[in-house]
Image (cartoon, rainbow, N blue to C red; front, side, top):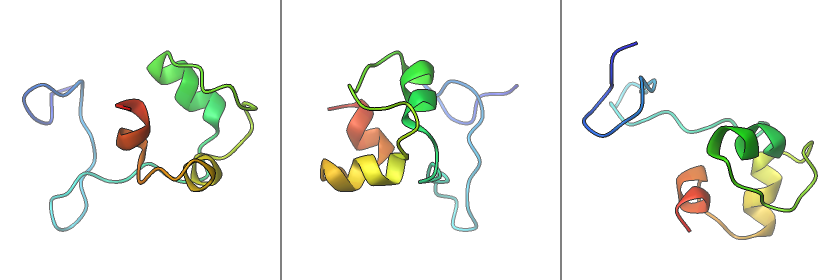
Length: 66
């Protein structure tokens, strides 16, 4: 798998404008926690979109780099 850009791990799909595709809001938090090695102290079946809404975060990147 080729890198998408310098400093990125692997390839990330882009939309028509060339921006990185946003993570789906129905992704389970358990998946996010496992992938990024962080514990957000919520149920694993909670959706990312609901979590971001509850904790007033703009995106997954905002959440991971807090």
